[in-house]
Length: 423
Image (cartoon, rainbow, N blue to C red; front, side, top):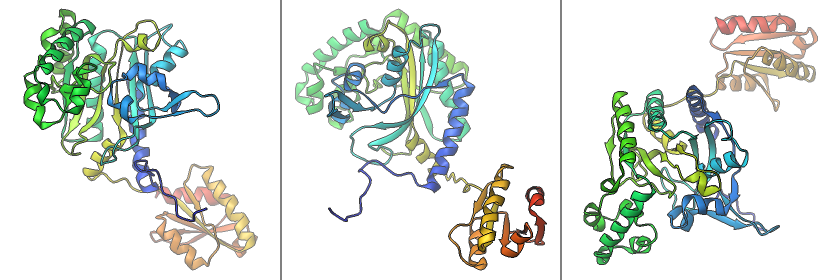
């Protein structure tokens, strides 16, 4: 057996304590924001049947063809996949547990997603998302409200240089007409298509519009527009979304090449993007997916939602210089001697009963070395116990920023420490 030090899997990163403080703060802000809009938490497994994602996302997509972590369960032969996104899992859970039986649902989830991509800044093989789904709402008002939600969060976080791109993918009939026209257009110019576009030509031609290949941009710019195929109802829906955004002062730009990488979208799609993260500029994206519930096996029901990448948002916050103070320590308990050690544990618990953050010294050492650690902890107060204090059932209190050292009875300790901290 090798003694080589093991490393984390490439593209799957540890989040160390100093960075985790920012994560905890961010997660609390996001949960409060979601609750303010009436969204409730749902938690789904990390592993789902592979067929769920093939059926929901589309077999001819980069995610299903190239990026999913799929495997066979050796015990029973089931085909399983680490979830690459959350919407399909959420809809599966809603159907399995009949959550749409009585009322529409506003739901959110958070956690790890997995895609086998080339790791780079803002894009990792294990990444974290907050996902938001509203199921059972058919009107443009919920589309617009979800976009307004995002605008409110960016303001709350103080994010700069984030812009909204908006598009509509219409309904199935208009997409079918557009698909036929796209195929005919690209067939006429096969010599310009790269390998990916050629592969997608007859399976998913809409995805060709999202190509970043500079040699194809002129061809894509001249391609038939889906907007020209839209039926009146879909156009009205999109017009109302825009009207609500304008009424609420949310600027946006129409990007007719915005098609999203998942096949289940229809009508409204949107992305919030930044220029400050290089190629990985999308920090939040989503849209409407009215056909997904039926695709997964339920009765037809409308849906709309979005997901935000936690790593990308935190990268933006850190680029703006956001630093959180380390978790505060109120009291550091210093002790020396067997009797003092036992009393110190009881004293620390007593102080914690009053909701104080207490760091109990462990591992021995002189009073001098322990006081150095107390100072490094940034605690406001040190409680010092030697065997002499322990025999008298007392403790000494030393303010770390200067002030008189006090010696008090253990039963009075909490009140005196609380008074010093308040001062």
